[in-house]
Length: 582
Image 1 (cartoon, rainbow, N blue to C red):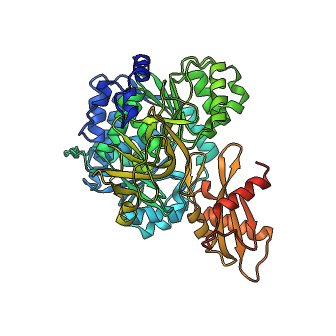
Image 2: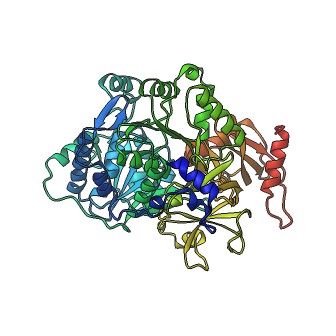
Image 3: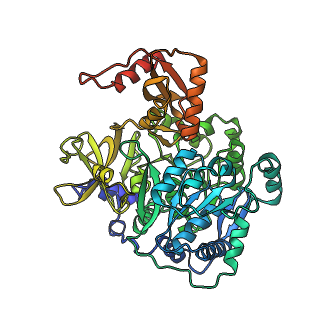
């Protein structure tokens, strides 16, 4: 069917202003996005037959019957503690079943799920909790000792401590206890602010009142976190409608997926890509979702070997690691239906290497690419056969419209012209939480009367409708798929008494693609030393997420400047590349 559409597209172009629409069928173009809540849409899609496998966690396979039972128990427990519609519940957990139960349980009772990175620094977690006035927190147990003090400065009145071992098979659970869990610090048994997951769920068993709140499609459902356009932390507000629309768009682009197929979910659930595309979408399609709470090369290999997944999504660093792992030399990938790269730009050379690797291992597909940003939940463009040109990011997902605009005037440019990528569509965020000023910088109403999301990325649309990404307008660095904002790192470094001025750029890394490097001008009386650099690294570890900590520090007397006396970041990057011979 898709092959016939591609032939038709080459022969007849019927959508001159939006040429990508020719790649979609009339039925796909007329898609109507659901008005249901996230939870109610999932229930509708799964239907009455719940004997399928929903989650696979270290070979512990959880059916949809068990899955929904746990969601319901969690929902009742939340209501028993007074969580009501509109309340914000923070979920600070890795990819584990309990995190998924909590996410859908929040939606079922009308609460808002605030998804936070478990490796956030104490200062970051305090900022998130105070900004959104969260009252209830699901926290991975190994974060307790790091966060116990800052939680006292927030409105959180109950924290549920959750161990990654809870849903593991017995043998692995015991192994986890011995190697990682036995030394963890825990709250005193008289500390009523904290509770274990098991005790929390027991509360839900006895709750008998009605707990199902029917949310409206435009109600706030999810808060995701990003630096936005300026790099300062922001909560991104996503409605039920937008989150479900992403799932429906994604389903159109994976039309060969069938119930009981398997997907590997390694992308984290505190990102829209992981939560929307790698959890909600496959669960709505009744696909077995294999959860990986953290990357482990041996575990990743075993999943390929034993589970033979049909779908996998990841960042470019994942594919580089896979290709360099000799264990994969004899892995058969002939069952693979879709392999998708997102989170960072995939170079043409890397794309060619990956495709050669896939074909050598029996795969009949090429790697696809997704493009998007958290402010639109996740992907807004995607490649599939006929649109998967080397170096491209595909075409706008069904229901989305792209414009290439002049970055200064915001006037739309002709096809083939390079400018800022702007997106209009059902997945665009409601705005930034408690920050109308930043919202107004990125969501702009154009002369056509529509509100457009300004991505801060530069690209162009070819005459056939395929989109190409060329560079970033903003300075954001992507480290293994995570957004890193130089201004945040610079602010932390400049808080040290020795640092007069800091400037951070991204430098190449063999596996992470890029890592931050900090250039520093010191105050009078201070000099370059190993001791100072250790202090600065420890300060960054304390204040920033682990992937934001600079890999290198370099002391300079001055920074290159532009004609307007601003730091010339591009010249600094060029100097660094020349020094590295790249």
